[in-house]
Length: 335
Image (cartoon, rainbow, N blue to C red):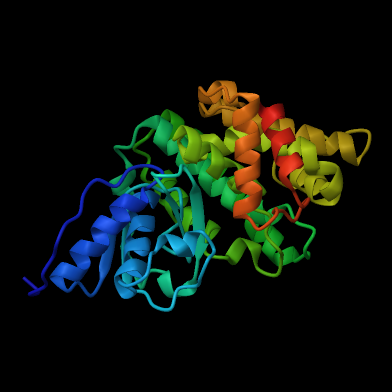
């Protein structure tokens, strides 16, 4: 009715593939597309962003962005209609793409790909399977926790926003476990997904994102559901790093998980970690690789640790900077 032409590209999958991005680039160039609209979950919206990069620079290989070999110099406008509350890609500057030829899973962040608009209707999420709803809630929680556990600054207002978001998502996840059609809970979670990954809950602090770095390797090698992959490694990551970021873990235990204080800060922090793992279990998510259904060999763990460190330029982390040996140790703990 508005006189707009539309060309569809289906086939987006979890851990979206660079091959589909290149297919979308070719379609966009062939039809003279001037806006890319991602309709679906984070994989569809991330694919839309990557296609927008690729179509704006047709003479260059878009994978070079994700491999950190160059920066984007252009991007078509992107819009988003999310049908799952999870990745927050509808308000973020980030996209994550997997290379189906090499098994690598890498992210690229640039504000030029942040969607110009997002049409968000919680009713679109009501038919999701329980596993996808729970995994989406976990991804939202992790996007904020990756910013909360930091040694790179302290902002009480930012912390309060983050803590409120975490408590709200946990409460609503339990509601949706029992009543998937609760509109208010769906709406809260959808809004939280956007706020969790638009920079608000980490404003003034240096983000960690080591758990995401590790999960990206699991996703690239085993094609696991992203949110579940995060919960499978989070507890091992937390126990490995918490002493290096003790004030934040103690604060999290008391303010978010609302545990009884232990005999000291370390005991309190460990109680908070255990309580979060208990929450993950309560919504049907794994807290180890066995529950995720994967059993990496020592060789595969070494390969993932090496790939993660190389992809991050040597390592990553604010709660604790993790290098290849640390990543391997965390994966062994999670096994």
